[in-house]
Length: 587
Image (cartoon, rainbow, N blue to C red):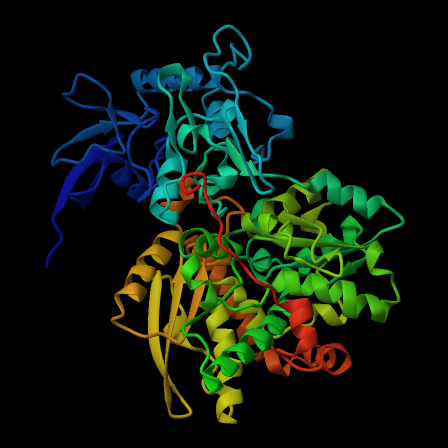
């Protein structure tokens, strides 16, 4: 059927667009920029900020371009003196209630608000700390992962909508009224026990740093500079799919070689890799699944790699904890092996070893301090930095990222297969597990290695595979909203499942809450999740080894230390238990 198009003019440029387009959509298609602050396509389209106003011929008042639909013959102007004056006045009012600490702000290099202030040359007549400042600054950060700062909040509502539509939990809301309005959990309760799963979708939606991760850059730099400490760094698969974005490279740039070089330039004593630990995870999780199949275990078995997902099941579906794999997440396994197996091989006192994980995830910060995550009194991981924090640390140390020559570490715990790499994208854990499980159950080589049924960005993916005569029902679920929907399906009993992969973030770790923030303008035109995923799939395709159980370094680890997958030592170092968590509304 032919699309219903209308023709209009925007800044004297004639364009034909679908009749249901807004003026903002039409302008974007025409390559005409209209400023915006509160708008995120498909997430928040409520015209709160009044920055995207335009002038429409024949209409007395300025209109919000993000909500007004196009009409045949419409004539729109986006940069008249009247429009520019209105935009400037709104920006100036927002600036009057903003605490400016740009020199120490985590969003200094990609703050949407600051970019607009620069673009329109707004004078900071108020400074955010004088008699015109109407609201009291409040910090909400009694947790290891995330902080809310009302002093930087524009009250745009983007975080509230993102929490509702992406996590499905609606933890955030507007509290109080008028000039005393503050964004936070209901009744301004601490976010630590408000039911938040620390997915970080609110951080990615925020145009400023009103919501940001709790930084540990200073602590990590101090450890590196301490001659009595041996500091080991390990990075998650998804970090290499996005780090270079922070230095001006296109989305979809493979950052691996420069990432390793940056670790060396920063002064880390040893480079490991979470990809190696992902291969180890597949051995443990895969054999756990096989054990359940062969010994009438609890089904479906749920993956346990995503700490945001773990927060979800502990808080909202604790009756299903028996279904959860007992495996720690890959970076926790990596940390445990660094401080035991690897420490012994290097001849270093494990008490002197500091493990730093570079993660695409906010929830990993929470996971790192969980009491379960230690062995023999030694924490598995000491510090977690997000991809964004790593970039800021590189900049702070004045390392010329662009000039770094790519390197490849030689340590055993930095050797991995393609299966370990694809852990960073939704469906990757399932695909990596299937490559090993299918071969172990059938005794035959899995062909093809690409399990297309679990790939793609559909939020709930299902498939049935015949493995050695048994129909195995699998599912892949990503994003808090989809997790809630899947549990409704599960509880209905209409279908039985054997193995389910869960990820707290839509798209998996490539879109984790600690990844470089893609501003709303770019999101309109670029499928950034697909581009980042392509980095990991390309690495997998190019890899010499693509199955976790064929990783020589993993085989050696079992031969020299662990003994066997799912064995006694494996359970000591690589497995854990989880328990029900209450929120303040449940107490």
